[in-house]
Image: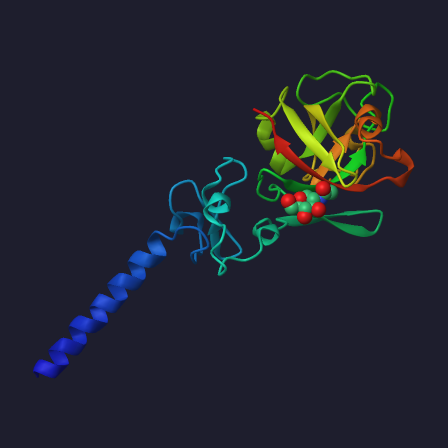
Length: 218
Ligand SMILES: *[C@@H]1O[C@H](CO)[C@@H](O)[C@H](O)[C@H]1NC(C)=O
């Protein structure tokens, strides 16, 4: 009788604890719905993570040195795919975490009216001269305009670096329409830069893409 009573108590404790855990998962904790996650976190693929729409960095900043945490690049997963001209392209609301040396791919953008950059820049609704030191950032890094008008430092493999102003978003969600010059959604790790930026870094625009590192400038 005493044994059975203990079993019942243990079982209900177990259920209670399990319920509690499910109700308030923190970063990377299991979840079924948004309500299962702590604070501003959302449920992505069964795990609680930062909500890119809110722009919190609770989970991405928590890593570092643990060894048990997955590579930072894996923390940002596509939420869907868009098919343009028969090819499927991932759509992202997030970008990899920003550090003091954030790895990215430098591409070339035409910010002028009538150029292949599509509509006017997202930050100021204006077109820009390609002789300005300006960039567009992937949706996650653009972060709802929080970097608009601010400068980032871009460093190339050749050791050269330049400061460039954020004026636009490289849209990682939408694409394949007139506004985006029929381009597929942007990848999530793009710094899309003017001719002036490429020139300042001593890079050949014809190459199309170059690995770079960037950081926020205070
Ligand atoms: C970016 O930084 C990482 C480490 O900080 C370094 O290993 C890599 O070579 C750098 N890449 C470029 C293009 O400078």
